[in-house]
Length: 367
Image 1 (cartoon, helix red, strand yellow):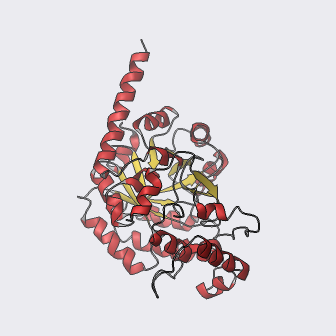
Image 2 (cartoon, rainbow, N blue to C red; image 1 turned 180 degrees about the vertical axis):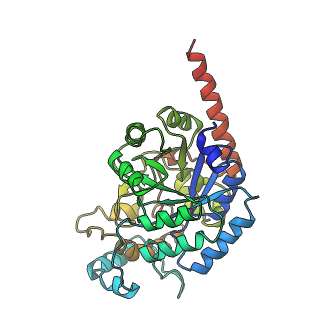
Image 3 (cartoon, rainbow, N blue to C red; image 1 turned 30 degrees about the horizontal axis):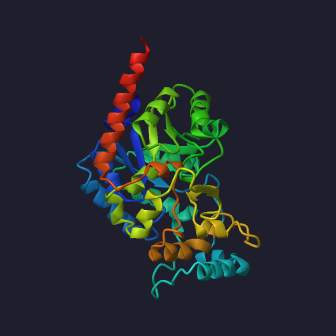
């Protein structure tokens, strides 16, 4: 499974793993892939500093990356209080009434009431500044190209930049801005995703950027057969995400019986693409919470970052309640194959083994 990206980053397998858990990211890197830590959850820059120090010390010297959420165009943000004032009262009322109707209990006083500030441009920039004081080999941006000065800042530190793209024209724009690696994020993916499925999107983007720009296939990838398919479509590796939510190491970040039951019982059709999570289209597990936003009289989701600020406390309450029928979980269509909880090393071993078996089977077809 060796491609030029393996030599570029000093990894054994071209398997890139996005995860909000440092424990998962470190385990993937130690198993031969490239763990990419999602930074959006870090409101406290001191916490991110401590977490990246932990990554430095717990990856056996293996490389890792970080992922930020930063729009290309720099918005005028103001203060958090100003942003809060921009959220309509009708939206707040809808959220409160929906939580009451779904039987979601409040959090203990003082817990989980701050919005996830990592969605703000200024906070994402601080994440980049902190990351570059450590030893990531890659900075990825979930919203496409970061601003050109941020790309140049990363390059000045010898760090490559990756950006997600949902169409060939977006990929060409990213390359023109200086992005090094394009993640072809298919419709099947969890979290932010476009409208084109990976079987069509990956070769579209490979052709759009040409042979000198590496492309990672992404979107519902969780098996060695899918990795084989991505490489056959022209990708030099894969970008994975949802599959790592079902690992033992992830339980250090998110652990309750409701969370585990929600994804282990779900089929590949039990997800929905909606703007209710962040204000931009994102794929979530289909639950009573997502369905409530489709009911008659429900408000339209707000633009980013207002929607996230609106629902952050609600999501904390929902996830703390542990009700699998309500839980708010960004996850891709690969959820239908996530039927048990396993160590990261076992998942990696299965991905590699199935890839090797698939390649061997295809070789026989050559006659």
